[in-house]
Image 1 (tube, helix red, strand yellow):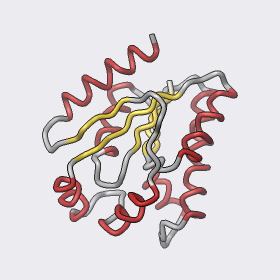
Image 2 (cartoon, rainbow, N blue to C red):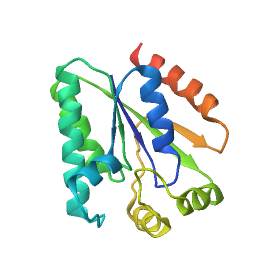
Image 3 (cartoon, rainbow, N blue to C red):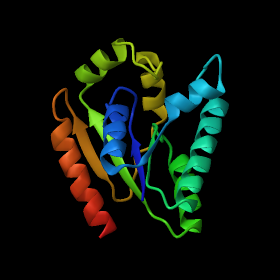
Image 4 (cartoon, rainbow, N blue to C red):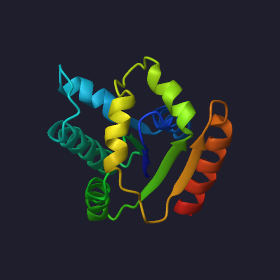
Length: 166
């Protein structure tokens, strides 16, 4: 099973994705962790982002070959990037379950003002990605993150995953 959790910085996607991976006993791959491993100084350039996504695609392919479940966590901000993953999965006759996490602007601003373990994305990076973010037009689950609804999000997501795999 391949699950992509995506959305804009500060949406709560990484918190949710890490909990979901743990619940599913799936491998968890986070773009921020990869970025820190690859680059001593991070600039969030397009070239840097594409290198991170390439590492994530390799991790996805390895998980498929080992018959492991995997949760991929990143902004996945363009249709091009999402299609790259979908086409790579199709080679193995696998389908990706997409889950988008959104939040209200005031919550996002609060989250982006705090120091986070792996992400350095601040409000300026959010604004840049928001300008170029392309919505996913195909069927997917959209979850709204608040400060206290992780259990509800998890329940909805697990039902969606069960239905999608069924």
